[in-house]
Length: 66
Image 1: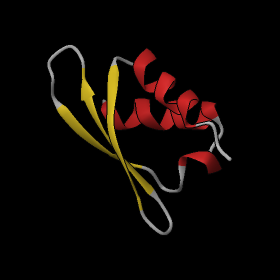
Image 2: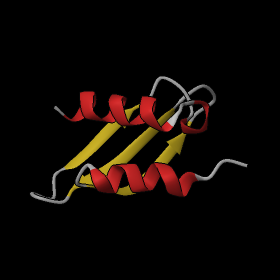
Image 3: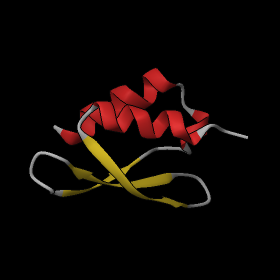
Image 4: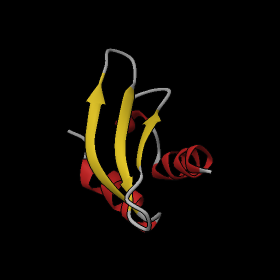
């Protein structure tokens, strides 16, 4: 079983608060709120979180929020 808490901690370090994670057959979509301005972001991942390393997840999130 994946430890989803680590992925949530990555989001928090990047200034985001995880609201929901929508799981589809082949991918995840993370709904997060940017803490500084309360903007809601939908971050589409190419695969499920547990299929990515934390480093890969971090880099992908950074790229998507810019």
